[in-house]
Length: 102
Image 1 (cartoon, rainbow, N blue to C red):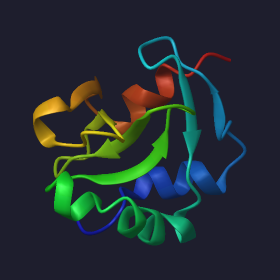
Image 2 (image 1 turned 90 degrees about the vertical axis):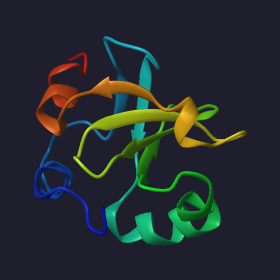
Image 3 (image 1 turned 180 degrees about the vertical axis):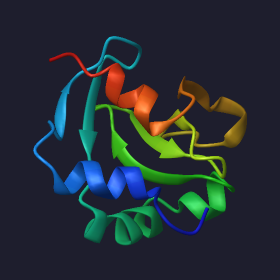
Image 4 (image 1 turned 135 degrees about the horizontal axis):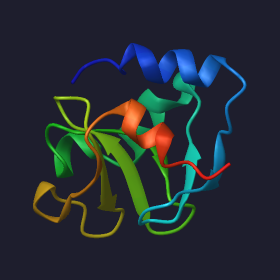
């Protein structure tokens, strides 16, 4: 995936929470601003360690939230980052948003 899903961009531009509780593991999310995503992915070397993913946020702790090439949402550890450790959080951005506790 070379770009973020348009639904992520629309959500981030809106009034929905950018940090908060999730009804599923990892239990908490913090979204990265779209203009910071490229730099953060480069800093974390996502293209090197987690080929096929693009990070867009974190759990506020040791996990990165990332989209795969099908725009599904996964959680990957920052330490030991590898596609083999990716855990599916949501099949789509809409499903992820539905899991945000309001």
